[in-house]
Amino acid sequence: MDSVASVVLLLILLACVYGTLGRRFDDNLLQRLGMASMGLGALAELWHITQAGEQITRGELAIYCGVLAFAVGIAIKVRHFWRVEQRYQRPRAVR
Picture 1 (cartoon, one colour):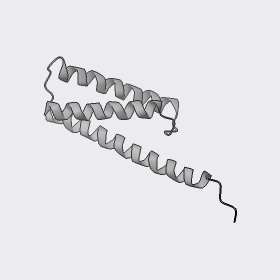
Picture 2 (picture 1 turned 30 degrees about the vertical axis):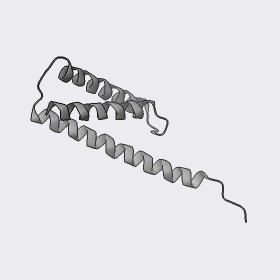
Picture 3 (picture 1 turned 45 degrees about the horizontal axis):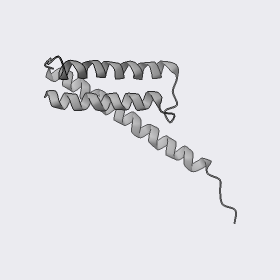
Picture 4 (picture 1 turned 180 degrees about the vertical axis):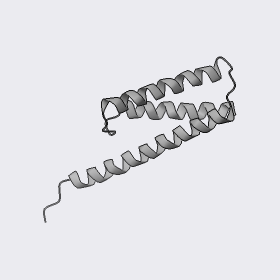
């Protein structure tokens, strides 16, 4: 269970870093600070699992999976709206 939690936390960390530093996610300062703090929290939990040898509960794993599902959902939404925006910004060919 700890290896699954480690993978989930690593994916949360990567999603938060990409969302915080990426230009596609047009958000405000509080959202960026929230994502940065979630990424730091995921990094701290990942360290506790891998280095300190702490065991996690099933409830913690469920919370991690829920946060990951939320992050993936936001990434899909941002990608969709970015692609729609790019489609309408392209110059039309003159016939």
